[in-house]
Image (tube, rainbow, N blue to C red):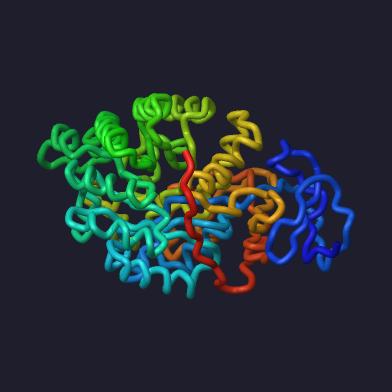
Amino acid sequence: MTADLVIRNASLAHLGGKTGDVSILNGKILSAGPHFKGSAKKEIDATGLTLAPGFIDAHAHLNEPGRTNWEGFSTGTKAFAAAGVTTFFDMPLNSSPPVLDALAFARKRAAALKKSWIDFGLWGGLVPGNEDQMRPLAEAGAIGIKAFMCDSGLEEFPASDKKTLLRGAKACAANNLILAVHAEDPAEIRRHKPRPGSISWREFAASRPESVEVEAVRTALSIAAETGCKLHVVHVSAPEAMHLIHEARRKGIDATCETCTHYLVLDESAMETRGAPAKCCPPLRPASTRAVLRDLLARGFVHTIGSDHSPSPPSMKTGADFFKIWGGIAGAQHAMPLFWQLAEKLALSSATIVNLTSTATARRFGLAGKGTLAPGSDADIVLLLRQKPKPIARADLFTRHKITPYLGIPLEVRVETTIVRGAIVYHKGKHRHGPAGNEVRRTTPQP
């Protein structure tokens, strides 16, 4: 059989690093394993490269339409392609209007189809008063529903109180939608209200301790248990919260846990040494907590990895008052490669890393044909090169604003090539073929 493309002599991550070939025909995987004996219209010699399913990032904020000056699909997805991300899910709140109904969903889809370099899914949103929009959003193709349990920072996307969450969770359960929550408890935030005049990063971190996250996760799990809703807790940074989710799963509650690269790579000292680019919510934790998070990662308490890429203009990432600075980590281009190199140093198997960065996310959100190199699946592939440590540089960023807390961190795992549905979209620092991303649709989400 003649393939369109064969990648030869790669170290196949999903097979524990065994050397083999991957063949592609009509944008689909033909084979992935030992030597491919057929012919090909084109071949790539991947000797010395690691080959894995393209990364799936379920947590991104590209802010279009309406706030394209913050990022936008064009620049954001170029950065994702350079990171080996072949599919991402865009959050509903930062676009204007936010994705709270089918019309706003259609507007965002149209923008993404025109500009995205990689495949995408779109989240819908839950806010007080739109609980009746869960069915229309499901019918429109929402990958899931996102709610904030605290102030989101945007007036048009208010927090969901317990009553809203309960109604929304029931509607999500009825429409087979995953409910994702930003889990920070507003009562706990008020309890740790900073003293007047507080502006430092230390005071900001102290105002949102781990208990803020833990109490919110307790509430969310209780609602999931009551309604039977599938729950996904995003950017978990508190070990106790991970334990709660783990225990809930043992009791049969359909809940999963996402953490982000920045909580595993950075610690709270980055808010001092790197400044505003390192501010996020929940905040970065102490180095001792980061060590526990890494241990829980290795023990299987984490189900998916996301970048939570949340960019903003430079004017929103400057100032002496840490409480007023926009709380978002811009990490689209390096979150996944940095996670991969950290996971290898933590001695996670390559199959485990593939599961965390691709397969488990596809399975959780019901993406048929994604996150795997099984025959017939989409030919979404990343080729990784080990290199001498090279500090991440501002000049290399493809994002609209050259802001990230990862600047200067030595990068040892570099993305050489990114392939989406059989087409090379990124290779050695250059993008190819132009925006051609497709929308992905959920089938039946799995635990």
